[in-house]
Length: 171
Image (cartoon, rainbow, N blue to C red; front, side, top):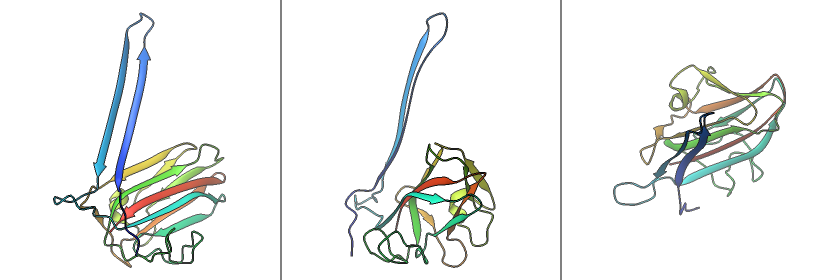
């Protein structure tokens, strides 16, 4: 069994701006969540990286957040990057990116049956243009995943091929 020794989720935004009169502003804001419980124990015990997966226009990649289903990231169907199987009860954080070199739009499509309600809260979708990303953290509590009813994330390539990255940590 693999052991997660660090499970930090962070997002940083930095902006330097000025106007024609010479006035300026610098904004730097970071949000960070160290996925530990009240006893400082790291809660997530599983992770998955799908790195730069090409999805051809009109096609989809469906990720089963509960047990990975038939997904094969190179180690074997239904196994993560370390060869571990999953039976996740919740997802602590997830990042989905459409690579900047993509010619199409990456649609996070949660209108399909058994979509994970924790991502968009229902039957919704978000379109990510080339270079766009979506990041969400539920901290150490996580958001529930239910096998067979609320466990799928579908990524669609719309109007061209896309190169997608998906990372999640779960328990």
